[in-house]
Image (cartoon, rainbow, N blue to C red; front, side, top):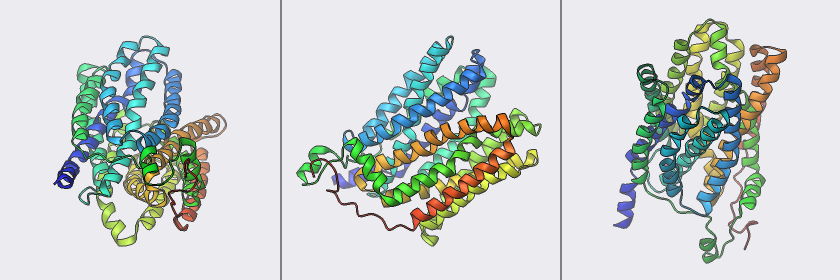
Length: 410
């Protein structure tokens, strides 16, 4: 009876709603954060500094929270704490916007709460799906991609009607139902808790031992190297897409169209993923998705018109729609179950934080001495090298995840 009740509480509707409303809240805040900051006389250079610091916060916070979810506090309670904290912290940003240092501190605090949720939701859903076949990660995450596009449209209209400050009210309005839905979703236990491992006669990984164990895993280490090279250009695309569209004479409306096409386009590919995975295997889907990521960087180097710059977002939609679920599933298959959250968080930190910092730093040099086209030619070459490393990772046999291998107390 208890198992049945737990499975019912872990139904797909609950996590789908949590993803959907969370992504609406995130879109309301950070997709329009630069617009709000500029309306409060924060300069472009200062906005750039804040966004660079956000990547640094993510680099530190995600691995720590992932390890915490594996070892100390069930991931459900971390998610609920972050969602609950994000609502009041969001209202600090407009209160602090008159001063750049205070505004930066408030935005970074909100980034800690909002951005950390992405990988925790991914890890939670993946682990719950192992116990409940009705939960499908790609469908839950795809729901978030679809509602992201809906939120972008609604928030844009709200800003036009009531001003930039409405984004924080909408952030709270969307995060509150996400919190309720997450509270109704089944919890999963910590698999690396010290007392539990000792009772089972197994060792417990400390934070540093967990990192070493993951990086000694040849398949995972090759994957991290491949993701680094693949996504350096990918993060620069996110930053410089508006600039490319502007170079072709595009307007803010054209930029909105490009973002909407990508956000809406991801959803059907995530729904398609389970069928492709069953027919071709997850490894083949992941490799194909990585080929699409390389193609996306190449398309920026070849873009010769405004229409091409906009419509190549469909390539981005196909890449992300297959890449995200295939990568999460592959990461889970080559890493120990009790370090699952740590592995997914480390992967996200490499792709988003490290690649964002490195990609945008290199972009500054390229734009000072070359052009966007040359920059994306180089990024395409790096992505192709990353594709090779991912291919080598996919050829590795999964390392035996011996419970007593290396951790303290073994």
